[in-house]
Image 1 (tube, rainbow, N blue to C red):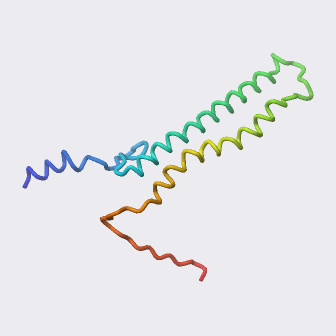
Image 2 (image 1 turned 60 degrees about the vertical axis):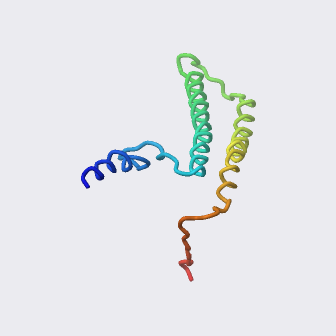
Image 3 (image 1 turned 180 degrees about the horizontal axis):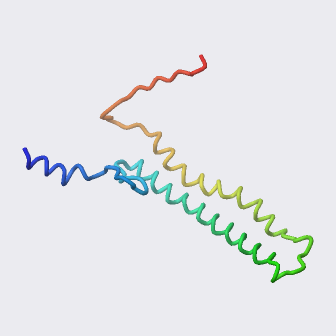
Length: 128
């Protein structure tokens, strides 16, 4: 009996369980979850790029308007190209996010042939 417990603790209990202070999600048990993890990694690329570009624009603006470098600043800064990019770029990003999200979305809609557990959820509106 003791041998079985130690065998369970050393082999089975340590697998696919959340750990304290764990970063990220635990190992995927289904292909659907693996698709969600891949989608997360694909989408997380965009916030990194956005933060790098915004940081670059901020540093450039701080250098451009520094009192030692430019003691008499111009009244008007013509940033037509920057304005165009700042307008078009945010509308393109959701398209790049939406395209890879269709595969996991439609794979979740598939019916499992022989489910091990079936649950029935009944929802009621709180204001009725």
